[in-house]
Image (cartoon, rainbow, N blue to C red; front, side):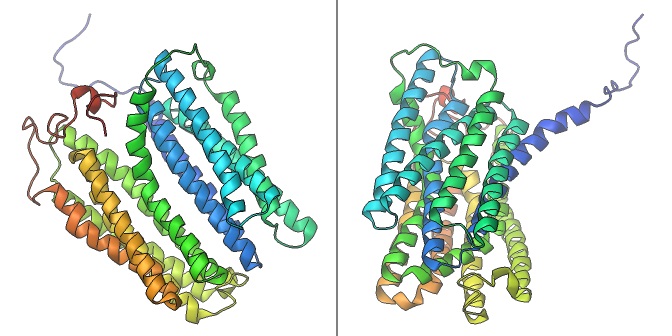
Length: 456
């Protein structure tokens, strides 16, 4: 006999909360493991005593970030959002991946050799590294699309352990930091190990290529192109200005700036994590009409800037109080007269990114994507123009470059990006239709992430 109306809430089964928490922790772990791997590899490059080798590795790692941003937008986002099990979509993704692999590997092998940065053998190694890097990232995104976050963590840690192991063994045997060739070799072997593990732990349906079916390449490309451009802007600006600094100011200037970027990386990782959280939070609140629009972004910008400043302060105190941390780097050999302004300049850049992130995240939910893309392209163009003017007019002031980029970005955020979010008052309530798919210029199908006519 079942008693109804007792007023007691149903008891939760033991372990329900833990089971729900495991995927969330896995998603956070997947983000952290990728960020930690990139950060550790960057830190390992700091041990280079040869300034030319360090600058070359910094440019190479920056290029890998740019290439990954492109492949993630063109391939990773479509396979996550679109129906990758549809034969036509699956074929389109496979063909697009093949084109991307060939293009980036050839460009990675030819461009640095043509520019005199690498020799022919090193260029061929870098082309191979770019190819396996993109392929591993695509398999990683397949695991994420299937919500297998803990498997992603295993893949990332495999890459990190293999790379660190090879570099440490090489450094021990040769009694000096590995050069460019050994560094590339370690990254290639690490990615191959991660690739092998990823293929082995992919679910069966994901490993099945399926029959080749014509069509849908255009739809997939339209969806992925906008995502690729938006993901490319910030790392692309930094990579472009790295090349300009190398050409105009020399290797030492680039090496010093790269040390500052690596030192401030923990604060940037915090900002990136905050942006991911804000995007999910804004999307969830917008669906229920609970967002307060620009006021939400204003509060989040202040909090994220304070958090980034706190992390920057801790890092700055650590490297200033313990000179041994940067003792063998180009900055360590020049003393605190370079380190203090360097940290201040990069600190300004980090704060500008922290302030911009909430408006970008909210704009991705409430603003038509074509308008948001135009605003972000204008921001990137203004940063490049400002940087080029500084290096042309006062090339000896290259230490101020990150601060200038931050000031330009902050100005563009406040005058352009923030204005896209409308009035600072409370956002629309449920049922008002504001922020809906129709008002944002997309169809209902597009709002679900499916390709449609209005996709940018």
